[in-house]
Length: 216
Image (cartoon, rainbow, N blue to C red; front, top):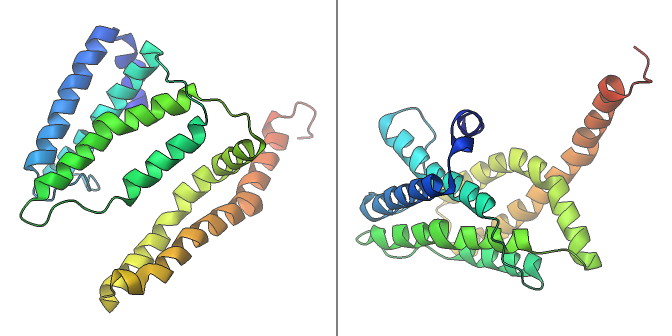
């Protein structure tokens, strides 16, 4: 849907108009963060009023902000950008929930700050960086290769882990070994899918449909 919206309408927006949409989307996102009942942006899974609101609220700002960053072409160039960006993402995602059930707006404010400020900063840093080291290049290549397989396959493992923790009423210390197993198991499963299905299937499709000398 976002691609269709861009192809038909948004690609004709000026930078000024894009900036206006970014500010409006950011304001809507911040309002939801401070007034939402849960203090987060989890949702958007079903086609009903509340879920559609969550989905559009968390989608519109990254969509317009990403386009504006691209149009502006303002990149931040620093040394070791890959490792800096990786560290920032790890810190952001490892941050525990802020505030208790009586102050859910605090966590909403933190998540809004990550979406509005930190994530665009990471994008600008990553886009302005360059890979020169042998290990950085290999790691990025590996992560790029498994990015789609891990995106497709990891969620069933998370559901199984969540059900296990919930059913057994486990503490963080008790569930930590399972969390590590899910983490490394997700990488192993994605790599297996890459080598046993993804790459062979793409090679066959390339030979079958793109090779001008292949036999019919």
